[in-house]
Length: 157
Image (tube, rainbow, N blue to C red; front, side, top):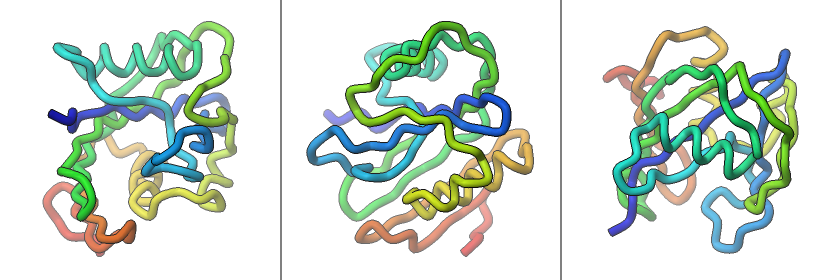
């Protein structure tokens, strides 16, 4: 059975986030998009255990300070519904390594909207910018196009 839970983290350094340009994997739903780092839960992992493992595997960094910012529900017409635990992190140790899923790059927060990112990601970036304590966001896609967004139970588009 396919795992439908994953973590995604945006590591902060100054006014930048560490972004992953997904260009290395074949048959990747995120191909050519810029996203954070993270991945699917392994058996019996908590969200925090998944977060720490995935960040270490994809970046070589050990997080020392992070915060769960929201839960994002993805409904699409191509895969079963998925649930993402969205984190930001502002403390880490170690040296950045290469990632086998794409190219890691520090991107100024003001330039993120110029990159090829998912439409729904623009919504949660705005929520991260406003320092929202915690949010629940449901994003519904059809044919790769955002058709509905629901924030804390209220439709927003």
